[in-house]
Length: 123
Image 1 (cartoon, rainbow, N blue to C red):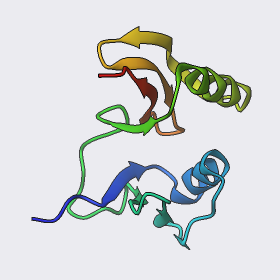
Image 2: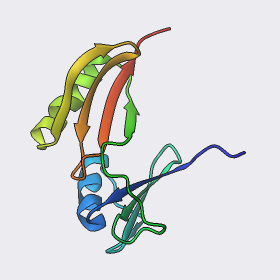
Image 3: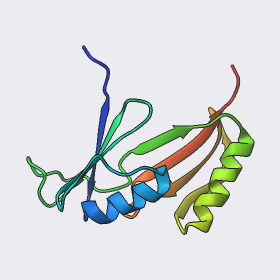
């Protein structure tokens, strides 16, 4: 079985969401249309943004049912990203805090998908 290498988020407006992720990720989508946009991430993972109004079969899930997680090198980087994203106006669902797995915060995208940034604790 192959490892998952494609994440799809169901969004209200793929072009609006593509603008959000273009700004957040610092890269443009490799594909963009009124119903779908796709980003090729440096990790090799593809991020798709599909209109929840046109996905087939119809999806019942909305934002907040999962997370996209960004692992970073240190608590200082977590704090720096939190500051940057706050200045950009992202809604924060969780302030930077220590949890069982590391130091983390959670922001929301325009469709309320959770974006977690974390620095894992050393093992």
